[in-house]
Length: 232
Image 1 (cartoon, helix red, strand yellow):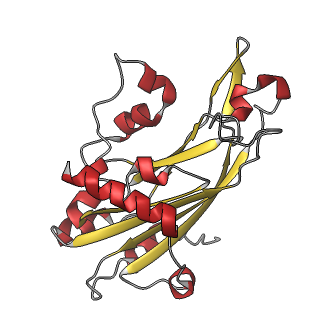
Image 2: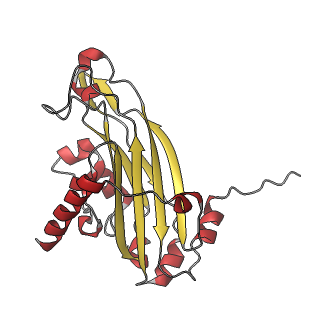
């Protein structure tokens, strides 16, 4: 109950102040102990099958965490901030207060696999079809207690941001971010023939630790830098 109360208060603060003032310095620069990664993508949220519109694509992004290094750091506290941004197409003729599915064209959501959750179970959890199948919904959990705001607070509007806090060892097991669609009028209003549209999004992921002597940047850079081809 205490955690739920704190999240409710944070939700009220979010509605009053938003996400606060952006830090230009943090946006432009990466430090050894505070790294930022930007991912841009485009997905087809809905598809038609037997005359019905259903959710279609989801994206799984594998994050290049230095797993061995995080395991060695053990109980060192770390924080991951995830921000998902996208543009919605307002529903024609709708003011949005009667039916939340008729104003936004498509809603997107993000989630991070939990420490007790392998990739297969993570996909099952965030996949709508799998969630509807009670016989095979996966064994993992969302680890919602580690999110600062929680999904009920962050899943509003078209910018969703939240902070996950834990230990470095726990984070070493959480390296998959899923982006998946929720209901919007592209799906609910088939007669407008917009269900086959794609939606673009930007995903910003920040990883930081308070210990300034820790170098997270170098091992991540090594993982994402393509090898140099040597011509013979």
